[in-house]
Length: 147
Image (cartoon, rainbow, N blue to C red; front, top):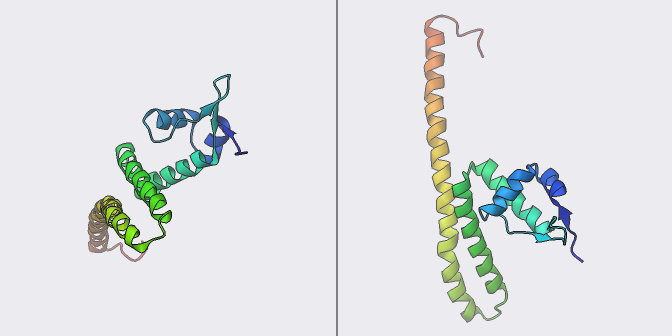
């Protein structure tokens, strides 16, 4: 029997609010959980794992909700192909699956590269500003105390 978790437990485990969980379900980031006869949502470990991946993509990669939706749809497509690939034992049958898989993986890389490029641009801008501040401090003779 698969363990089931109430919304309070999932929210606490993932560091989210119950409202956020319901919203993620509403916009399709999270599949609707089973409900008891009384209407109480009962989540599985798969829901929790998915939420943790979403939180990781949001926090580490800085994805907006729209970007998260795009990333999740690609991830789901990728997982579907991976499952099909694993069930094939003949290498001749695996090749077409790999050919289908390649652009999906590439698309995920493109999304991450776009985000990295934006982060690099932001870092460079702040770094330039920092250098200007340091130069101004040095010109005013106050560079030794500040480090």
